[in-house]
Image (cartoon, rainbow, N blue to C red):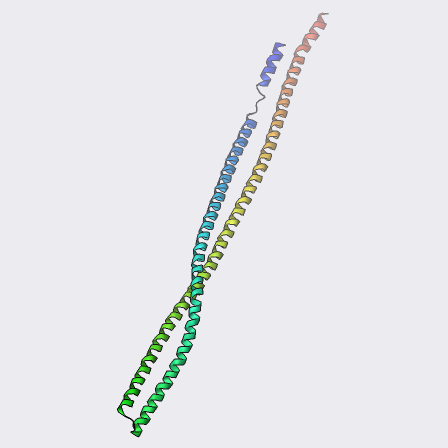
Length: 259
């Protein structure tokens, strides 16, 4: 009986399977490595998401500041345009009146020249009349020169107003271009966020699949280990029973011969 117990104790020593334990350790190492990789990838995706959100917020603030600045300049130009629009209309009216007056002065000057020429040719005019006509002609010329100067000044004012209108149009175009640029950047950021979320979902799915597979392999390894243990235990148990039978059988024959 003690011999049988010693054999049973000896059989238990062979129940450990180094290859299976080594395989389990390798699987455990692979699982830990994959977990670390997935954790690192998830951390990178989180950092990318935070960076994208920060960039989106920064662009939104920059866009708001630039839009406010451009709108302020645009409103100033609109106020200036509203203030200068009546002036421009008045200048155009005065310019038209000045043109008519200049034409009339030119006609009057030509008429005076013709009258002086006619009087001089007839020889019936006194020196006082000639001086008066000369003074009148000089006054008309000075007045005509002033009208021309005023027309030049009006032209400069109109050019400045045209420049303001061009500046207003340029600011409007820049606002539209800035709006398109910000919209494009926001679309790219949204696309990057969607891609990051998709990668996170894929990683989570991959993690769940790996955990399920590892759990399945662990269960199979435990089942195989259990089956192997039972097989080895049964093998050693049967071997000991057979040895005990072969040893005890001759002694029975000896007892029969003695009878």
